[in-house]
Image (cartoon, rainbow, N blue to C red; front, side, top):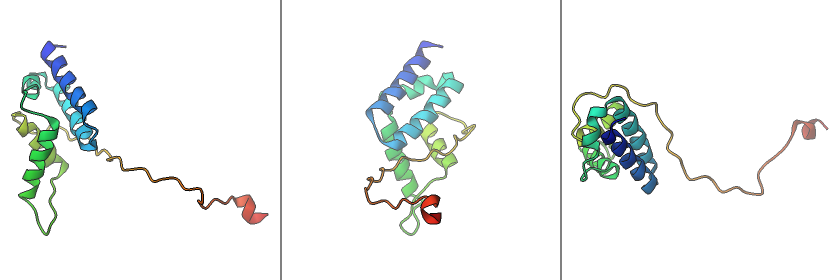
Length: 123
């Protein structure tokens, strides 16, 4: 693996480790897959002024341009295409990663949960 690809992967992983934002994790995984498939784009990903978090903020601004009735969104294809454009990578997204569920805050367990077994009902 060329050094610039290794450095790009290290940069992406460091950003993913630093930012616990679940969307940074999704975009980071996408970029890892992209740079492994397209090693020629490693230099663009390594640009000092480009970060995953900044790409998400830029994507939010892009989505707001399409805002309708207080809703703004991009399709996964549009979102990942925007990420590539943010990094100065030309071309279309070859494959859009399978949707990844964004982790939510786990509910606090309670001690008064309803719990019954079939034996209790038949007994």
